[in-house]
Length: 328
Image 1 (tube, rainbow, N blue to C red):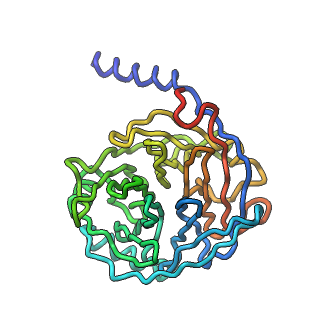
Image 2 (cartoon, rainbow, N blue to C red; image 1 turned 30 degrees about the horizontal axis):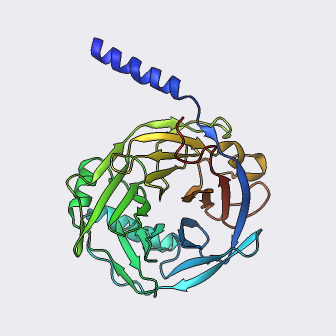
Image 3 (cartoon, rainbow, N blue to C red; image 1 turned 90 degrees about the vertical axis):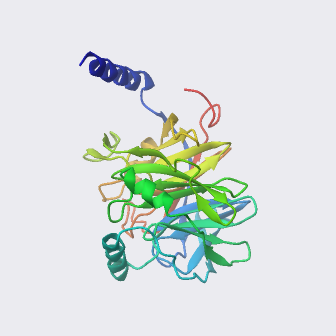
């Protein structure tokens, strides 16, 4: 009992010392036009080009023309996707996803995109818990991922619920390490490594599996406790950054242990009255972190925000004082 009380006290003291996350400063916002299915669900910066995916489109990636500061044009890059490999997801989960695709579109449910230094793009399919690799020339192939990953994830309490599978992806510049984010109930982080022709766990795949709830930001209308979640990942300067949608924050983590090092909030400007949506949860689905700041993309599910805008929106936030590597 004493040990339990001491642990609870230590956790409480730690939360008090940590204090509220520092607010990021918004520099600009950009409307995205030309995405057939809307629903911007992933962003990647490949060299100097910004790429995006929609969870409603299975046959295309989008390169964003950013020459117009106010409205970015989504340029279509079509892809021929080969048949999806069999996964170790249970039949019941796969069948629900298949049925949902007839109602909303997007059977593959692309939820994240990332790229390596060679220009290969990696796109995660939530519905199949699979990763599609698209070469610089546009050829597409599914990564051969050992079933160990799915088994370890499910044994850790992840990937158990419909529409709560993989939501984010990040790859290292060399293209031989891949991080995946399980969305919620339980949220988690996994790491797989390329071993010749197969991607597999190097010992333990699951770096983090976390349940529980946390309060939405005070700026949120009728703020309440909601499930902890991850919406996207970005690897920058040797650190893994998580987009935590319902908390309206970005957190820096150790890429090998997933331990949180520091978090920053974007609630103050992201939840200004003119930027509010009627939907009762966070809509930030896509993120890229770079030296100058962070790009955050919204998947508004075709719903209008307070000013009437229905198209996807991308926010640009400045890097925190001292940069992303700064200590608290």
